[in-house]
Length: 522
Image 1 (cartoon, rainbow, N blue to C red):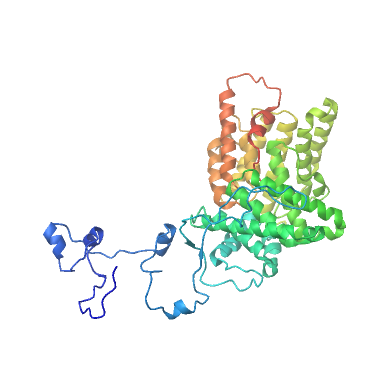
Image 2 (image 1 turned 180 degrees about the horizontal axis):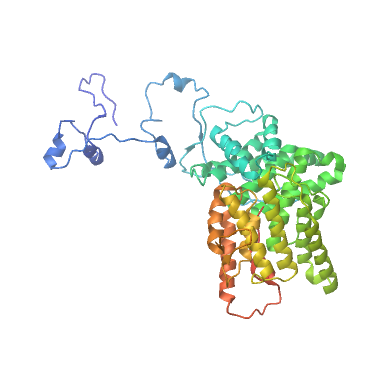
């Protein structure tokens, strides 16, 4: 547009704020005549006048400018000259590529490192900064999204335990470490929170990907410049790895979370090799070890693959119910042994296998899990439902039981009614595994379940699908992947219901294990 001449005295054109909506839609100037403007009167159109509300979030989600924001001005304002802490920062997406967890004992991938890639060309910028920094994190060289951090504390952390009396270690151990934590820790936590919250606020998905890429980049840099001892004892490394593992579970639940699991195993092995047991088993480090080991053993109950964390991480004599596990370490030890025994079944003699299976069944029957607070009904029921799920796994994976057997039907019915009790209270932490076990062993010939304790009847498949919907918003896991596997199992059972089983593997090995690879159920 040509500049106005210095001696140009013609009337300046000012943008109309009161023009009719019809002229606005036609992109012509409105003379604002009442009740009908000249343009509408001449064309015989309806002259519409109304207030149109515009929301900044809607424009930002479409990468559009909001009003005149960001438009060039001849004279800079004071805000332009001295940007304060309320100024915006434009950030572009990095190219997100496949990656592997990198540690001193895991091979480096040959692809480009996330965080060091070139920015995509011609990409629209996205405003991801906040109005103010979160000043309680002096070591974090980032502007913290207070809304995402608030979501982590107020929404996500309560979803990690069913107990109403005991606080989650994600609160008692992770939050106190944040003021002195590195920016990588904050990035990883915010990435997880944004990823989980993106099911409610879709605009968070892009922020989650950016934060996760930045956390990965920081983690790679730290691992490349740390000694073995620093690697083994630095709490930031453990927190970042745990949060990234959870991020991958919530995001897609594919092989990437298992890669983080294997990286964590190498770190744990290094620590056990360099540090005495009484020093290594302290607070945060003990929790992160149990987190990874629990993810491994619960996931392997479905797929039956080789263990990443062995049974040495579980104290078979500790019957106290842990608020985060939702059961006792002793129960997890039994589950771990049962899963490993199922995997080694063909390497043992029939007598040895049956003897060990009977021993595990006896241990489970004798196990009396102790809830620290007798008034904590939620935690007691959580321990009970996981005990029942472990019993189903032992009977079906070790003793060749099938869904049509009365014993299995009785156990499945008890699990369904306990899960129903939690679902009615909008609670879902740690319930995906027992629900999956029950769903995988639903009787394809009779879908109605009842118990002596409850007078009502539950329609198995219908209830499972409704419960999964509840768990989507009341747990920190990937429910959609579990739902996909469950429906595949049901379909396979329906197709085979008229056939005489001809496979040599037992029911669990034939229907469940082949479809459950990389499935997280913890």
